[in-house]
Amino acid sequence: MKRPVFVIIFISLIIVILSIVQVSVANQISTTGSELVALQNKVNDYQRENTILHEQLLAAASFTTIADKAKQLGYVPAKSQVYLNTPLPLALKQ
Image (cartoon, rainbow, N blue to C red; front, side):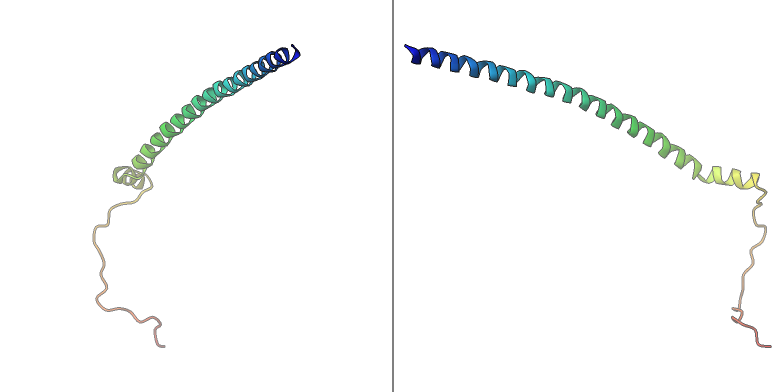
């Protein structure tokens, strides 16, 4: 008579332990999902910021922007170009 009672208690104990394990694993999975969503939001924010910075870089490096800044600094276009027909010696003899 003792043997069936022992088996029933043992099986009940295993069911309780496995239920607790299942609840703890489900809890960990649910928090991992929320962390994943937070990380995906951060990635999206960084991608958006990267796109904005890339556009600002392209705007700053454009020819019209550089030409406008050069005019503000007092640079003027060259009126004539100077060409050297013969190369000068590296050091002049004295």
